[in-house]
Length: 186
Image (cartoon, rainbow, N blue to C red; front, side, top):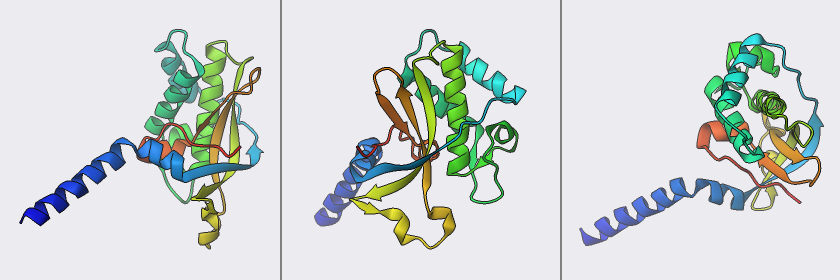
């Protein structure tokens, strides 16, 4: 009985640590490599513009980290993951609310860039939608899948145009695991 109690306690401690430190663990294990950039989609949907404006009104003098977090939250609030039958246009996604990683990244990029514009930070900061490859423990995870759906994974880099500082985010990962930042290969 004593062994079982210790075993269950150990499992509980490990699971709790895994949940509490999931972001750190994920960033240690997984590295994002950029394989290209997708063009941003201009904001045209009134309902999306209203949602972004409401988000912007909630913050006074935010920094880029705060805007990234707000854009992640808005993206997670408005979208649900779907592997098929989805659009990649943020203006349509606000209505359909179904996206895969490409749609999540496109939506987040549009939201983030509009938040930068609304806070007069667009001359300094920009969100860029990237096509990427994920490497876990140094291995390209995409080679383990046959489906074209897993040939790459989209994420977003937020860049300071002056200093070159970057913030890497994966909006679809955030929606599932609440991991706010990811690690980019240098």
